[in-house]
Length: 186
Image 1 (cartoon, rainbow, N blue to C red):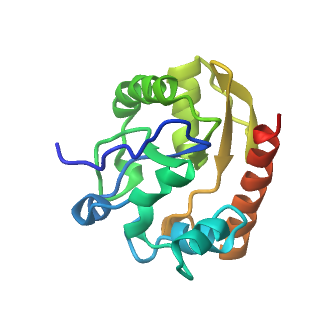
Image 2 (tube, rainbow, N blue to C red):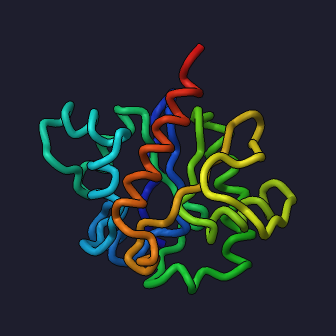
């Protein structure tokens, strides 16, 4: 099966977790590759992305930069590695199979923080990874951890999640950056 590889490095500050790669992203070989996806513009405009833009000498990060982000302490993976046209086609069986792999990835790379893009991927992680089935969850830091690693949930930047406006996505990455800075302090 062709999919996107995990983009990891030692001592990650942040591991960003998507639901699953889109067929479009796999065909183009980059995370959040679809032009309508709002991840790269929102990240670029945020406190989290601005230092990376400056270091790379670009005004805005693009999908081609995904392989560079691990050098800045930001990695990428997915709950399910099977690509699809839409995340709505990910089945409970696929989550049951994907979550243990994700847990093993998190345990192996031990990032400072794991941030999920959307509740759609986080809820199955809770169920199949932590044995919890909470329905009422909030955005931001979660009351759960995986072996001492804090968990965080961001709105999914997909165009299919258009009820979150671009400014709200930027604000979400700003809050994530602030939370991450707090974790990095001694």
